[in-house]
Image 1 (cartoon, one colour):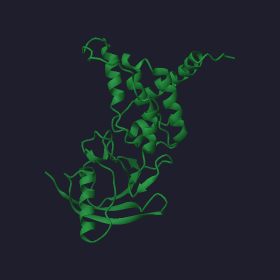
Image 2 (cartoon, one colour):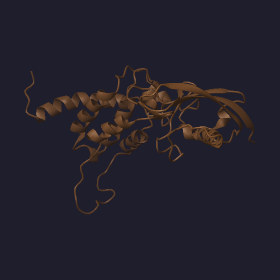
Image 3 (cartoon, one colour):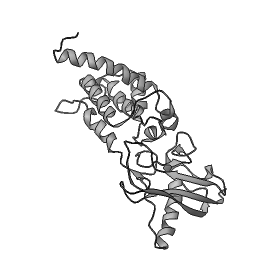
Length: 259
């Protein structure tokens, strides 16, 4: 049975990337604990608009835990206190009447604040653009089972493909690293036969593009703990192994002489 709770919000407000930010306090009273966290913010925004005030900006789209658009720090935790859950799927029943919730945008040098809780995650797009594709032959579609793929390989690839690119891994990492995101996006292609043609060039390009924007991984493991899809740290090990191989293979293909 649902109940009504009252919570106090301390929300980060920032007018633009070059503007100073501050915390504002808002009361969220009469909130049903059946509401999602974003639905609670919707109610707060409706009240702000009705009072002639500026609503709180935050990212969202599908609200089904699929698109990766949502994501804020709630009391210092990426996506909030419920493990393996996106902000849009977090419900107010996880909080108690009278709680104070501190809501901040993702904190990371590579994710500058656009406004309030909205950050620029375009460095993720740069990583994908640098090598996230596979080559295909033109012509009619091949038969579904023309390339046999072992079940364990297919399942592992699907585990990597579950990454929604929300950025929680970067926000939770003390170094602001993006190894978990990059490793997942690389691995779901590199594990499959269809991804082998560009495997080594893709690996080198994606890792080195990542290093332009993000910090280095030192195995804190916070990325895995914050990830709403629980992407395994094993994919980082796979990425590091492939990167070392790629440096040798790509130099050999380019005709460089090893010292």
